[in-house]
Length: 333
Image (cartoon, rainbow, N blue to C red):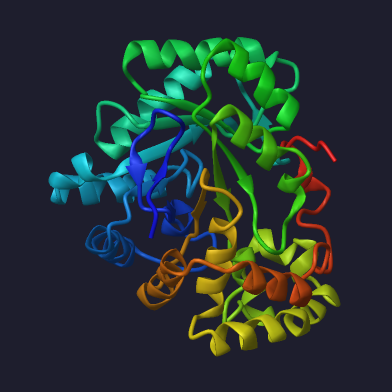
């Protein structure tokens, strides 16, 4: 297992982090006790990076992490914590508003610090860009938050390679968060390369394809109770059944290799670059341990070719987002 840096000058980390959206009820019902058990197991396994956001459960995820740190004071020195700001709920209920103003980002960071119970975070992202605010201006705001001591480093989520270059000219960008997995390969059309060139960590969310790349994907019936997935093209009929059929050979390959499908999916993401840090989310200790298998497996070139033959680029049925879900992420290909 090879440790990875969160940016060129960042801390050395276990190659796998925790996507803490799962600490809210986004992918199914959970509770504080279950989330704290994940964090206990993370510490035992050497996993140190937690990635959360102010809107995950509208503060729930950060609050759960905060109560854990309060009960386990040594956890603050152990964990590297990233959070995000800029998404606001539209008061009329129609989607989200993206606010990249200095006043909003500063206020949201302060609120996040209070929920987390810390004086500073290790990384603060702009969760979604407001296209009406130049990214240079937003980066200046983030640089001011670094200068204030409220965050040690800054990043962006779901931005284009060209935007990353513009921001990096203003202040070093530590990390860019993007969906990246065997099911979502678009970052390879520029973002993977640009992050590597600039020494920026590529934090890969949904690295197990929102459960498709596991041995027990969410059932179609379970998806109907999860608003985001119920309206996601890959989880809607007939795409759902087509995707379930497509991943069966991958599950069999993983079993032949002595791995869980999730472990093999994580191993593949890690093989895409030393600066790539997957942040799977889970509510299950069993699943978390399966995921961590991937950090112990270094895939050979032949194994990578076999995986590619089973799940070639473009294998997934359906877009990764619906029309409304595409509001916010920057398209660049």
